[in-house]
Length: 168
Figure 1 (cartoon, rainbow, N blue to C red):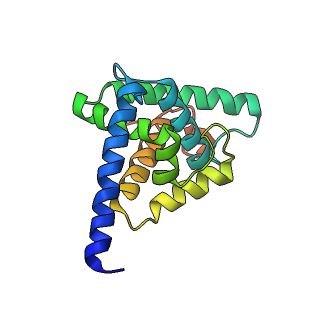
Figure 2 (tube, helix red, strand yellow; figure 1 turned 90 degrees about the horizontal axis):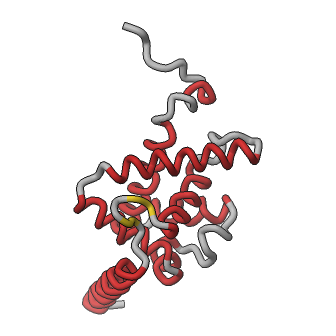
Figure 3 (cartoon, helix red, strand yellow; figure 1 turned 135 degrees about the vertical axis):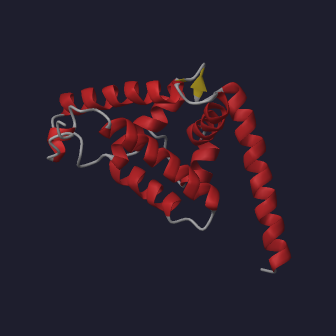
């Protein structure tokens, strides 16, 4: 493929994603009034299952409780972000929640809630190692927000063997 055609294809794909993402975000935003929408929660719940696998409790009830507590902490963190950051994240979550965006951006062809842990991890790995900066940035944002909200909970620290900060 000639470089000019490749650039045209890339530019067209970026414009299409921006148009579709903006349209989807208007009807199904990832954040509503600074809080996770149902679609945003689905995306972050799946990302948490993929990123935190091995760190979550093995017991199903404890695992579910840990994930719900994580989403609550994440919601509080996102609410504190400036409106511009919330808007960008809302668009990303809306795009990832919609089937065309999820398939294009994450390479995941089933819904986040239907995907198993291996499928989620594969999709995240594909984003992480992509040659497209947009996919890499989306991966890093999802992973970093997930890790920060989960490991900020002092109740998680003993599970990792971390005793907590030293008393001064």
